Image (cartoon, rainbow over all chains, first blue to last red; front, side):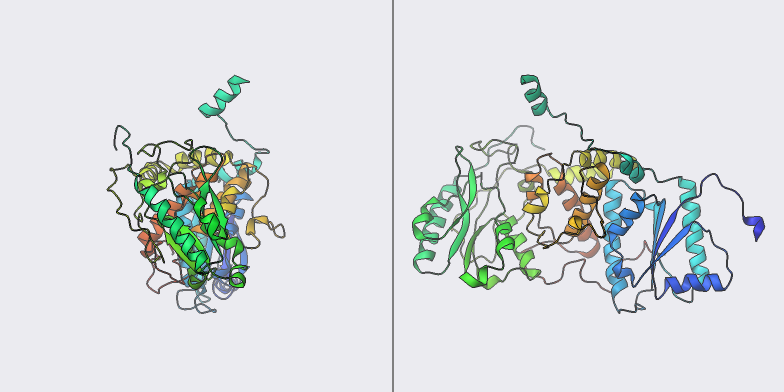
Length: 166
Length: 310
């Protein structure tokens, strides 16, 4: 497998928010089965996809993530009965909002990976990593985070008039 | 889009004012309510301000004009714990305000039996940028009124009996702007919103005025862990506006008060309208006059769309 460890110019940072009951166990299975998947992914374990607040995704992007993956149990398999159903609606709405703000949705992936689907986990992570690698670094939120101060442009005609009158 | 501005007939507002005055006076005399939240004339000619009156003598101060822009529902969320203690509260509501009240009842913030609703058949109110005492025209009207489909509030305890004159055809400002932004590339949209959010001074007026922002502690004020930066830097501003739009998704009644009070003229209601449009398409949900105890994002069906999930 070492022959596949080629060097890339850009290694994306992928944050994966996963449910502890399914995807985390699925990722564990991938590991114990000695499957290879990109080390770009950082896994964060949550009790349920229903616990994953959209603000976590924002925070991840602000802190330098190039891609975010949210993964949990298949519909009907939720340990808490309905957490993933709620998450499904919430993220459907959140995607639309991010799209409207101007975030490229290619950087954001959602998947259902059960505890038995180590192979699917490898596939999902590899796909997202390669996609984000091709897209290059996520600069939008990082640029914002680097701006040190308020940067509004005040150029309304009323203000200009008031300024000229001083 | 009309090329010239056309006047909007607001002659019914005088009749409405007389009707709400006599109704308020009757309510206090019959001791049906302990207070009425309404509008009264403010100091500048033609302007109006929210007022809470507690006796029949003050009923004569109530007015309804095109300057009565505020959504009075916000006074009830802040005072909701006091209501059952003192008695019924009367409130003057336009159609858009009633939708917000109905949303609050659905979220168990208010009880219908604690309120006496005085509905206003509304032809429209003035935009926030124009001076009071301006005539209401298709140009000076608030953007939310251009796309209003709730001129007549339903399910109120009292509605003045007037006939709304048919209004002129108006441009759909929000729909047109949303369509314009949707047609741009993601990078162009990001540039647009970056410029808009950069103006934000984090005064939180949008949160204070919003009937639905009733959390006792806002997520955005917490600092352990700090989810949203509190300083008015671009990063914190963007996060705040995304979180605000997300928390209002499926709840916002479209009263556009956030946009009206924004001192930096950020088009906040555009985000709310966009989310309302998406939720209508996804889950066929719209804010209305029917009390639902579950919103689109607090319920689910097993057949919800999951085409975006692998």
